[in-house]
Amino acid sequence: MRITVLGSAAGGGFPQWNCNCRLCAGHRAGTLRAAARTQSSIFVRADDAADGILFNASPDILQQVKANAAVLQPGRGLRDTAIAGVVLIDGQVDHATGLLMLRERGRPLPLWCTDPVAEDLTTGNPILRVLGHYCGVERHRIALDGHAFEVPGVPGLQLQAIPLQSKAAPYSPHRDAPAPGDNIGITVTDLASGRRLFYAPGLGAIEPAVFDAMRAADAVMVDGTFWTDDEMIALGLSRKSARDIGHLPQSGPGGMIEWLARLPTSTRRWLIHVNNTNPILDEDSAERAALTRAGIGVAEDGLEIHV
Ligand code: MLT
Ligand code: MN
Ligand code: ZN
Image 1 (cartoon, rainbow, N blue to C red):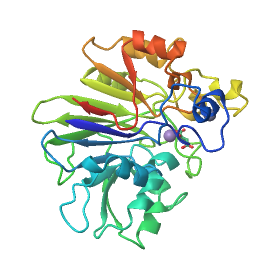
Image 2 (image 1 turned 45 degrees about the horizontal axis):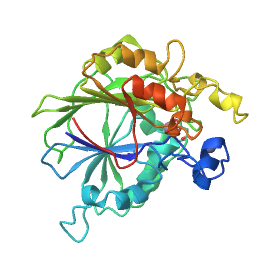
Image 3 (image 1 turned 180 degrees about the horizontal axis):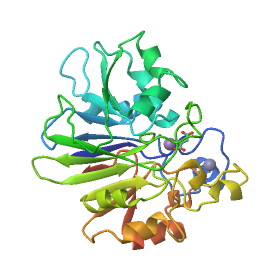
Image 4 (image 1 turned 60 degrees about the vertical axis):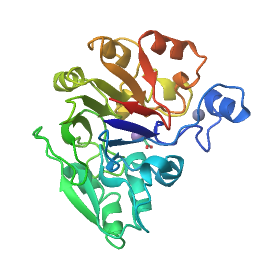
């Protein structure tokens, strides 16, 4: 399968519009080696197919389509797209509001999400109801029983969801009463090669079933939001820790680096959904060097990966 990273930053992107942290300011000033990044999304298709699946619809989707026109705009008709369907891993702003930007479709947008995400997107943030006034949504339910499903029009790829510990969006009616399915990870299997990708841009804790899914994959692309648990607190930007908002930090005991080190040596590893405060954005940082030594890549916008 072919994976195109459309957006590799967490909510806000990098540099973030109102942020003057060392990284955002350094990027603007041109004094830092760090690539700009749009908000979290990937596009996946089988090797010889043009049409594929958009995982998450970022508010930056229009910019992402322009930047990846050769992949996303095959130009086969007056109105055309390579996006055969959209799969949401949660209902957060950075993953769902781009749906509104796809409203010019001629037919309802095929959309896969869990029940709690569908509820959030019809109540707290009623994007799906708004879309009903435009192209409409053909919603498919992602069940949490692990059964495999396919997206029609995307030959050769099979998907399986696993519920995760992370966080529902602040506007979720059950923000403080987490429900299974608020956040999921997805295993994408290429049926021709048998190769698997595990994708989980928001991952607050690695439970045994989640680690099993990671171990079974040839490539993992997982939560790269924060380096330390108190990153936002230390900068005076928030009172909440990384874990409080559903993101496992990379460093320290029990952090993502430790978990990734337990995977088979052949597993390819990337971090994605990187927050603008995370020092790994700085390509000359000690933190980035530590990832490189651990064999962990940091996803960048436009990165093409063949699994
Ligand atoms: C998150 O995953 O916590 C988000 O990136 C928050 C946001 O989009 O504001
Ligand atoms: Mn996010
Ligand atoms: Zn910043």
